Length: 110
Image (cartoon, rainbow, N blue to C red; front, side):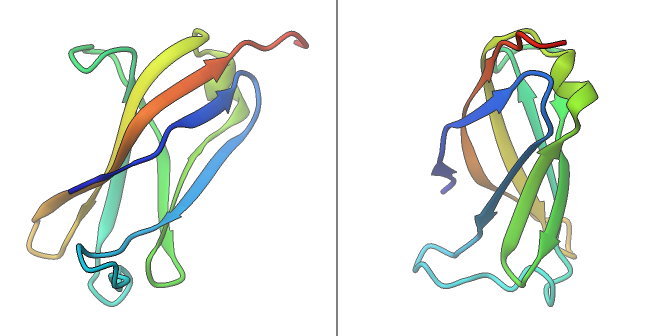
C-alpha cells in the first residue's frame, strides 16, 4: 500500500522531493540491486487527461527523488493537484509507493 505525503510546489522554482521506499514491514527495498525504475505524474484531478511528469531518480539503495525544473513549475496553474509515484521491477511488476496532494503556490516575481 502506498504511503501518503502531501507536497508543496512553488510556481517558477526548481522542485525536488526525496523519499525512502520500504516494504510493508518497514524494511528498505534495495531498488538499485533489484534493477527498479520509477515514474511519477501529477494531475489537476484523478480523471484529468493532461498530466505533468516528474523527473524521477533512484539512488542510495532505496531513495527515490521526484523533481521538476523551474520552467515546468512556472507553467503550472496554481492550486491543488494529485500525484503519485510508482516503481517497476525487472519483471515489469508495478507498485505505487507514494501518493498525495501537490499544492502549487503562485509566483509573484517573474
